Image (cartoon, rainbow, N blue to C red):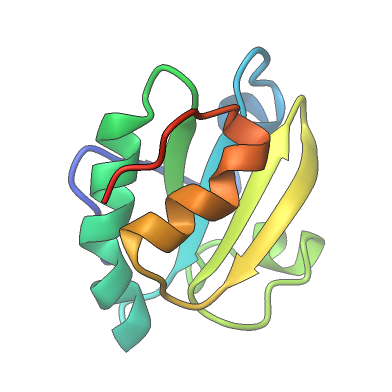
Length: 118
């Protein structure tokens, strides 16, 4: 799996405990795969967002190839797919790589973030 620095990996086995059971802050889940070029492009962006938004947002990754139950459960068809969960429910979906600024803007509605930085 393409691993973004500082971002925990989750699996089918611990998805409920690590994502669905989280209360108090949203969880950004990146569905990724080793063969996915845009996932590699997105890795440093995910790492930066995880570090900068740690107080408002939990960020995790899941290897789509190794965790088919979660992929099927949420209808993930393309990589990378980003799903934001709040109190165990998916509240936002984004597909494809994007720049950090764009991702932060898209996350603002669920994180309550103030100023967006470059």
